[in-house]
Amino acid sequence: MNSKWKKTIIFTTALLAATSFTACGFSRSQGTGSIPTLVAPAQEKKNTITVKRGDFELKSFLAGRIVPEVAKDMYFKGNGGYLSKINVKVGDEVKKGDIIAELDKDEINQQIKEQEIQLQLVKIDCEEAEKNNASDFDKERLKLRFSLEEMRLNQLNENLKNSTIISDMNGVVMGVQNFRAHQRVEAFQPLVVVAEKNKFLVQCDIRNAKLTLGTKVNIGIKIVLAQSSADGEVISNTILEQSPSKNNGNSNSSEPPEENSRIVIKFNSEPKDFKFGDDVTVHYIASKATNTLILPTNAIKFGAGNRPFVKLLKDGDVTEKYIEIGLNDEKNTEIISGLSENDTIIVD
Image (cartoon, rainbow, N blue to C red):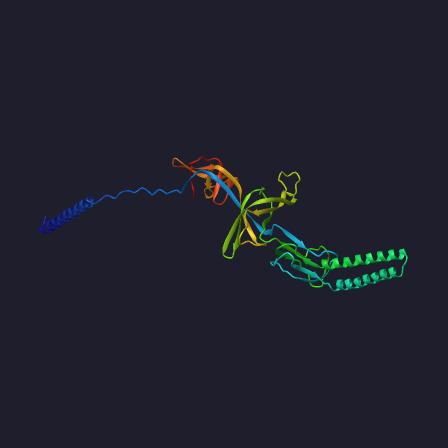
């Protein structure tokens, strides 16, 4: 082997040795580092709620209006007549003896003057008959005529009295009919309504009312930016009319007929900040269950056939459990069956 080839073999051998040494050194340094630790995937935390036992109240409300406890129609008596003026407007306070309205009195005053003259003439005739020793028949006839004319005068004076409406109570004007001056007003035709001041009731006209006598309520009203409320109770529930059930008027339907009712509520004490005609909201407890299972409404789902169910968590397993529900509102629901106290429910 010549010298040139020997040098080449020696150089290659040295190069391979150096490369092998470097690789081994690198492998050792890598082996001395820390070994990465495997981390288990994070478990998803479930929102749960526990079934509890307690009392449940289903609250409801209805719209009502403040009406007077005592109100009276004011009208002309006698024969009626042509309106002269109405002296009050809605909201006015009146006192006993105040003049509410008047008829035109020109005609009746003229009739009274004429009748007074006629009565005076008959009186003169009676006196002349006495002076002239008239027959008893003539004297009796004149006496009867005098009595008749006197009765006519008394009637005209009564008509004059009836041409004015005078309030017989203290109160506030609730309503005034839209009559114009010189318009004909019949006798006993209601013209003005006066109510006793600060004696309020609440009236609610509603369909299918379930409120019974004695039901406790709270009456609320908005006053500008504030609110006011007072307590009361139902004193009457009157059916105004009945209409067939919604089942197409089928007489064989088991559904009861719909009823339009008028609920009347009295205040437990004289309310403040209320006035006649105010619209109010009446709050009451529609139903109540005691010592019952209660679950937040948002924990309940509905499946096929609108059947309610919940996601029950037990021993780490989640199952869908059908339940029977009772009273419910936006916040809570009564559980009739399907769950037990302290069951754990998943809330999505």
